[in-house]
Length: 279
Image 1 (cartoon, rainbow, N blue to C red):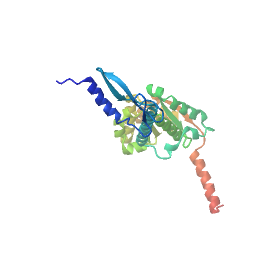
Image 2: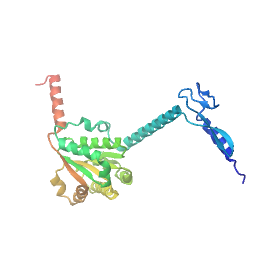
Image 3: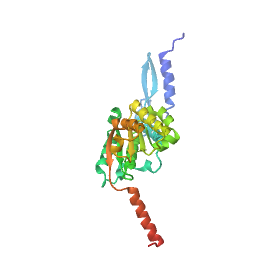
Image 4: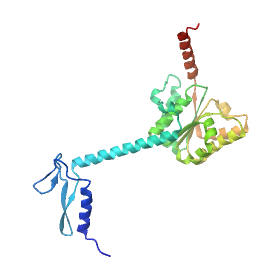
């Protein structure tokens, strides 16, 4: 086998790298015969000795270093944006929920509960490692889904894969597929536990999702209109095995107060009555 001369090898490498570091307008040759940058005045070429032969090789001046760093940051930003888009697409969140943030939370009611949800998002790496989820419970319209979506968005912004959907939608369109992808989803948020139909088929699907997540050792956040008493002592034995799994791994966080949706509906009704001239 023919041996490659070291000097020739370095020359060939230098020729390749010259293409990425060519002379630019304003560059000049210094008194030492080496190319210099016309902006920062630093060397763009250097002499080295290989096997007794002097070879001129390209080197990066300060301008090229800064340009390379900017390119690296731009590439990283583009990659992060692409990943965020992919994560958003995976998340299954509707457009309204994808916009909510903790900064917009009205903490006059449920300030303690909102604060706990915010800290959960901040501590998520630890929560994930310990397989600790949340059970957000309370009456209709008290902000449970809003808080869950705030957590989802906070985690997505940290780069964690999150899926947020309702159990009703899940049963109707893809529980089996989700179970197959379970290990790739860092956080699963299931809205409206207890709202699903109590058929054998529906409850088996719910149990499969809950149990698959349990066995994968990954956390879940549930929201429910049920009380803790109803979760702890369900009348149906089929529900008991589901709720036992939920209560074992999820810390209960209660949301209280009047329904925000009912309040908004009443305000809208009053506005319409005034506009239409009703009594």
